[in-house]
Length: 339
Figure 1: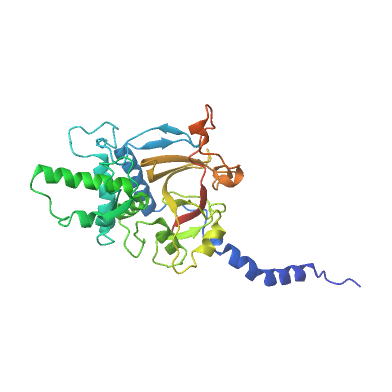
Figure 2: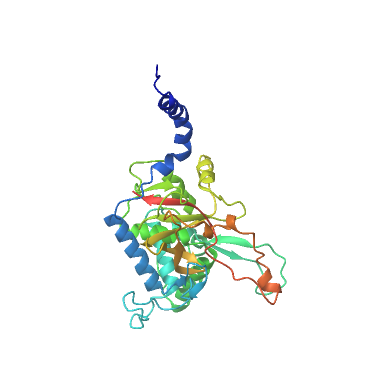
């Protein structure tokens, strides 16, 4: 007498038992589909980012992490360029790179009241008179130095001082998150769709909340194919979040904040296994960066420091020879997918 095989029953039972375990681990990965053409919002966002890169006359970074082109920097009086021709727009004086960075903060101020004037100047009391001053560095907000910030000064001297203070504050204020907020503002995202902030981790955390109104969802870049309009982010600082699972755990904290950086995906070339991203405050400029994809068309592990031994950053200062630094070698550990 033949008995029916119990193998299908065992498989079904195992699936039922293990489902809750894998559901928790892969919830975000399953919520991030690979297919589908980019939406109109995605194309608009990519167009805004790419135009900003070309108009700013920014840096260009190759997929091996080398700087192919050095462009304008944050505090320069370098004129913005025509985004279509690439030529310097000398017929429009005053359109300086530093003033454009200030515009990023102004756009953020449309969503977070007073944010531009909260920029801080770092100074050491008495340092101009004494190069060996032992005084500790201090910070002052622009608002305290320019009490009438909303009104332009009448005289040239006052105007010059106001501009000098703002340019100095731009140097002392990380502006990469303000740049992302500027792009979202230009693309037309509302406050419900995007968490406008001067800190990347604020809007990254919001993407983990699974709010239906929010424009982005948090995904694992090791499992999710990047698409135009997505934000690819890395963690940095003394205690970086090296993997997506680290983010999942960290964002549960009530007062969560961490040093990070995000860039907008503006082009995807699947046949070449390459993507292009645009980010702000990259080597003090707006930069267009090329990154590699692997066979699964997700971000290549070759861009992760986990694959390489740590490099001594002081080597290039004290030795005749040093290894070429790869600026793409970052903890790219979270991808915000545009829904």
